Length: 362
Image 1 (cartoon, helix red, strand yellow):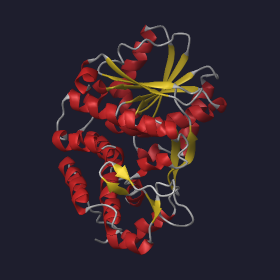
Image 2: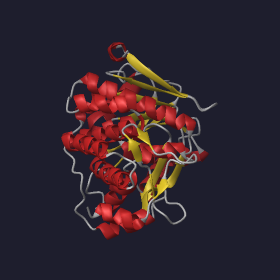
Image 3: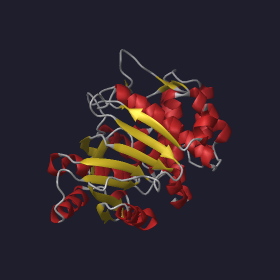
Image 4: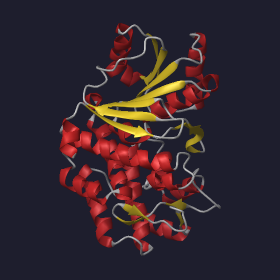
């Protein structure tokens, strides 16, 4: 079935939330073939890097089709994911008289998608928006599911909401603009997806990771999108089941914050998976063989499986994580490759701080 899908013009995955249904369209070169509605006024929100790489070409495409479109950008980087950036973008939209019938296009990686989506959710109490992710990480993760928000000193994404887009367009041609570091970020999330939901997909990655051909990326993106779509449909607001997607992220987010985002998200999550897998092993849940296979795959991508920074600071950051509960640190823990622990309807387990510290010092 995979070969048939990959040779087709476009892969379409539908998400159903009752009245809020939309499609994820995945393919190669599909963005240039997209017909935009010239009756809609568009605002492309992107960052300073993506503007030059593909923002201007998208703007020209819309203009050629007769659409009214402007482009707003902000300095690239996680440090721009702030209240101040959001306010500046909103002020520009007001200055250009964008109304409630306008549409925002989030063109870029996860930072762009999160900020642009949050702007769309609150501008004039909500305008429609479309996600066009340009990084592998955003394609397999942040562009899907409607999580939008910003960072503050207290943590990453602690201010935000859930706001579903009108659609997602994933064109792997945009991956050609990425440096190797950005591709690795996406591979880390792809490994995470296989660890929490699909042993068969994990086996596929063991055999194929390191390849750079279009079929590998199309298939991997499709698998991640299908898996995440089904998870999000079951638990849109992350009341419980959707939390399985946070595997590796409790420790990963703490590492990012502790290092002032000088460590990439992919590397932080990879190290987070290694430690959270170790916690599961020490609790007698995950087999040593499965932990070793996970860590071997992480290492093959080129990421470390250990953190050399201040462990005490990591613990303090985790205590303030938005996913904390009852003043305890809760983790998503795998019990085997492709499946996480579930107890009494819960997919997170409270772990004693002493064990967490021991594993981080391992």
